[in-house]
Image (cartoon, rainbow, N blue to C red; front, side, top):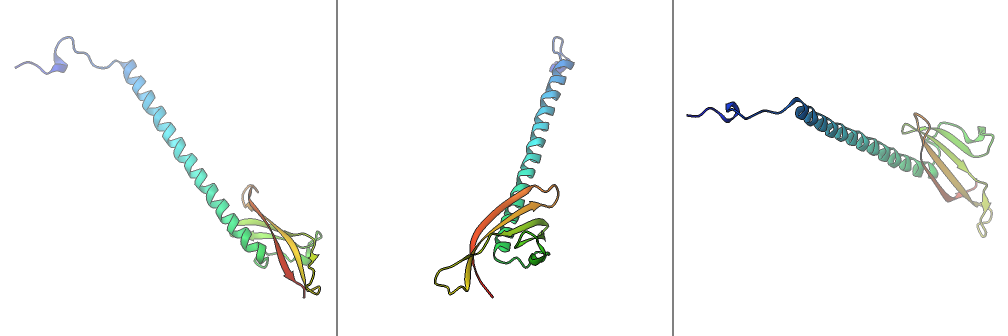
Amino acid sequence: MSPPRSLQPGCRGFTLIEVMACVLILGLGLLAATALIFYGLRLARSAQAKSLGMATAMTVISDPSPLATDPTLSPSGATTSGYLNGLWVERKEADAVALDGAAGKRVAVTVTVDVYEANGGVLCTSANRRIIKRLP
Protein backbone atom coordinates (compact mmCIF):
# COMPACT_ATOMS: atom_id res chain seq x y z
CA MET A 1 0.00 0.00 0.00
CA SER A 2 1.38 3.37 -0.98
CA PRO A 3 1.44 6.36 1.37
CA PRO A 4 -1.21 9.11 0.94
CA ARG A 5 -0.57 11.55 -1.88
CA SER A 6 0.17 14.41 0.51
CA LEU A 7 3.06 12.45 1.98
CA GLN A 8 4.57 11.36 -1.34
CA PRO A 9 7.82 13.03 -2.33
CA GLY A 10 7.34 15.97 -4.75
CA CYS A 11 3.87 16.95 -3.40
CA ARG A 12 3.85 20.29 -1.75
CA GLY A 13 1.16 22.28 0.09
CA PHE A 14 0.26 25.92 -0.36
CA THR A 15 2.84 28.57 0.26
CA LEU A 16 2.30 31.36 2.75
CA ILE A 17 1.98 33.89 -0.09
CA GLU A 18 -0.84 31.87 -1.71
CA VAL A 19 -2.70 31.58 1.60
CA MET A 20 -2.30 35.32 2.28
CA ALA A 21 -3.60 36.17 -1.22
CA CYS A 22 -6.67 33.96 -0.68
CA VAL A 23 -7.35 35.53 2.71
CA LEU A 24 -7.01 39.02 1.21
CA ILE A 25 -9.44 38.27 -1.63
CA LEU A 26 -11.93 36.67 0.75
CA GLY A 27 -11.66 39.64 3.15
CA LEU A 28 -12.27 42.15 0.35
CA GLY A 29 -15.32 40.20 -0.78
CA LEU A 30 -16.79 40.13 2.73
CA LEU A 31 -16.07 43.83 3.18
CA ALA A 32 -17.89 44.63 -0.09
CA ALA A 33 -20.87 42.49 0.92
CA THR A 34 -21.08 44.24 4.30
CA ALA A 35 -20.93 47.66 2.63
CA LEU A 36 -23.78 46.67 0.30
CA ILE A 37 -25.92 45.56 3.23
CA PHE A 38 -25.42 48.87 5.04
CA TYR A 39 -26.12 50.83 1.83
CA GLY A 40 -29.38 48.90 1.38
CA LEU A 41 -30.39 49.63 4.98
CA ARG A 42 -29.72 53.34 4.44
CA LEU A 43 -31.85 53.34 1.27
CA ALA A 44 -34.68 51.54 3.06
CA ARG A 45 -34.59 54.04 5.93
CA SER A 46 -34.67 56.94 3.47
CA ALA A 47 -37.60 55.43 1.56
CA GLN A 48 -39.53 54.91 4.79
CA ALA A 49 -38.90 58.53 5.83
CA LYS A 50 -40.08 59.82 2.46
CA SER A 51 -43.18 57.66 2.55
CA LEU A 52 -44.08 58.72 6.09
CA GLY A 53 -43.26 62.32 5.23
CA MET A 54 -45.58 62.34 2.21
CA ALA A 55 -48.43 60.77 4.18
CA THR A 56 -47.91 63.36 6.93
CA ALA A 57 -47.78 66.21 4.40
CA MET A 58 -51.01 65.11 2.70
CA THR A 59 -52.72 64.90 6.07
CA VAL A 60 -51.54 68.35 7.18
CA ILE A 61 -52.53 69.97 3.88
CA SER A 62 -56.17 69.33 4.57
CA ASP A 63 -56.13 69.60 8.38
CA PRO A 64 -53.52 71.71 10.22
CA SER A 65 -54.99 70.99 13.67
CA PRO A 66 -52.51 68.19 14.61
CA LEU A 67 -49.67 70.75 14.61
CA ALA A 68 -48.88 72.28 17.96
CA THR A 69 -48.68 76.02 17.19
CA ASP A 70 -51.49 78.52 16.79
CA PRO A 71 -51.61 80.09 13.29
CA THR A 72 -52.77 83.43 14.72
CA LEU A 73 -49.50 83.81 16.63
CA SER A 74 -47.33 83.56 13.53
CA PRO A 75 -46.04 86.92 12.21
CA SER A 76 -45.97 85.66 8.60
CA GLY A 77 -49.67 84.88 8.34
CA ALA A 78 -51.18 81.46 8.26
CA THR A 79 -48.07 79.45 9.06
CA THR A 80 -48.06 76.53 11.47
CA SER A 81 -45.28 74.21 12.45
CA GLY A 82 -44.58 71.46 14.92
CA TYR A 83 -43.66 67.81 15.40
CA LEU A 84 -45.94 65.18 13.92
CA ASN A 85 -45.11 61.46 13.51
CA GLY A 86 -41.57 62.17 14.71
CA LEU A 87 -40.99 64.67 11.88
CA TRP A 88 -40.83 68.47 11.88
CA VAL A 89 -43.67 69.83 9.73
CA GLU A 90 -44.10 73.39 8.43
CA ARG A 91 -47.41 74.38 6.81
CA LYS A 92 -47.73 77.69 4.95
CA GLU A 93 -50.81 79.19 3.34
CA ALA A 94 -50.56 81.72 0.53
CA ASP A 95 -52.90 84.70 0.26
CA ALA A 96 -56.54 83.76 -0.23
CA VAL A 97 -58.18 84.46 -3.60
CA ALA A 98 -61.94 85.01 -3.60
CA LEU A 99 -63.84 82.68 -5.91
CA ASP A 100 -66.32 84.12 -8.38
CA GLY A 101 -69.94 83.12 -7.89
CA ALA A 102 -69.42 81.93 -4.33
CA ALA A 103 -70.92 85.12 -2.83
CA GLY A 104 -67.66 85.83 -1.00
CA LYS A 105 -68.06 82.75 1.18
CA ARG A 106 -65.26 80.66 -0.36
CA VAL A 107 -61.63 81.34 -1.15
CA ALA A 108 -58.87 79.40 -2.89
CA VAL A 109 -55.65 79.04 -0.94
CA THR A 110 -52.36 77.43 -1.97
CA VAL A 111 -51.01 75.36 0.91
CA THR A 112 -47.36 74.29 1.03
CA VAL A 113 -46.15 71.68 3.51
CA ASP A 114 -42.47 70.92 4.11
CA VAL A 115 -41.53 67.86 6.16
CA TYR A 116 -38.08 67.59 7.73
CA GLU A 117 -36.33 64.75 9.51
CA ALA A 118 -36.21 65.47 13.22
CA ASN A 119 -32.49 64.80 13.52
CA GLY A 120 -30.37 66.97 11.25
CA GLY A 121 -33.23 68.95 9.74
CA VAL A 122 -32.91 67.36 6.30
CA LEU A 123 -35.92 67.96 4.03
CA CYS A 124 -37.76 64.65 3.55
CA THR A 125 -40.54 65.78 1.28
CA SER A 126 -42.53 68.78 0.22
CA ALA A 127 -46.09 69.01 -1.09
CA ASN A 128 -48.37 71.80 -2.18
CA ARG A 129 -52.04 71.86 -3.14
CA ARG A 130 -54.64 74.45 -3.90
CA ILE A 131 -57.60 74.04 -1.59
CA ILE A 132 -60.93 75.78 -1.26
CA LYS A 133 -61.83 77.09 2.17
CA ARG A 134 -65.14 78.33 3.48
CA LEU A 135 -64.99 81.64 5.29
CA PRO A 136 -66.66 81.90 8.69
